[in-house]
Structure formats: C-alpha cells, structure tokens
Figure (cartoon, rainbow, N blue to C red):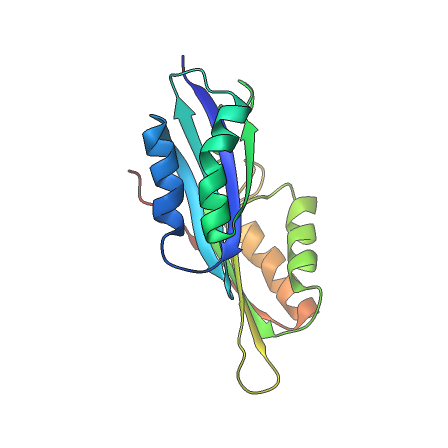
Length: 181
C-alpha cells in the first residue's frame, strides 16, 4: 500500500521551480497524483499530492528538499495524509462554473463564498484576478462548485442573480465540462 503526502511550496516566480520539485520526488520514486501550481503576481505557489510505495519519513523528505529550498529560496511544507484524507471526496450531482465580474472592492470573495456555503454549495476551485489598469480596478473571480442534491441549477441561477444585484456585480453560471483524464 502506498503512503500519500501533500507538499506545498512558495517562492519568487522563476524558471525551474516545477522541475526542481518534481525532480526531488522522482528521485525518491514518488508518483505525482494531483496538483495545482500557479503564479500569483511575482510569487509561484505549488500544491501537490504524491504517493510512494516506499516508507518515507518526514525527515527524509525534508532533507531531500533542503538543497532546492536554499537554491530557489522556497518555503516548503510537507504533510503526510491519513487514510481518511487520502480518499477522493464523493462527487455531488454536478460541477458548475460561476464567474463574478465587477468593480473591485473588499469583501467580494468573502460575500460570495459565504453565500454559497450557507446553501451547502462546495467550492472546489477558485481563481481571482484584479486588473491593474485604469481606476476603478475590475475584479474577476472564477469558482468551480459542486451542488448538493437538493439544489437544482435553476434555483442556483436565481440565487446568484439576487446575490449579483446585492453586490453590484455580474454573475454567470454554466455546467463545467471538466475533462476526465
């Protein structure tokens, strides 16, 4: 049985971060399973789940990442996943994409995510971007969500319409066409 881990890494954006992290894992005989890696302004962030059939200790993994951390000035955190944490969550009735667009101001992410949480809607992915051009700045948020069985897409559309008016933003909803690998 393989043991699963999650590694997070953060550092100034530069070439070689993905190659360096995956090289460490490759040399240890680990298999990459799920990841999200992105640049946020001048920083690069990595979240990566990997497994190993070998018994790896935290100290072994930490030592293997030390040279890379020094070379690329990365903050790296490793966490073993328990058996309960290692199971894929049950997918709900459907995955939908919600886009929110409007004038930038504090609280947009909080208010939208809080409203969705109160409805029992699970957010599985979030991307945000603020334009840096002319004032006022524009804000874009893209959310991937899973609906509980009691909420139908039409009900969600109505709910989002009311939320959009309250927040003075534009909101759209569409079925996700997530590719299955």
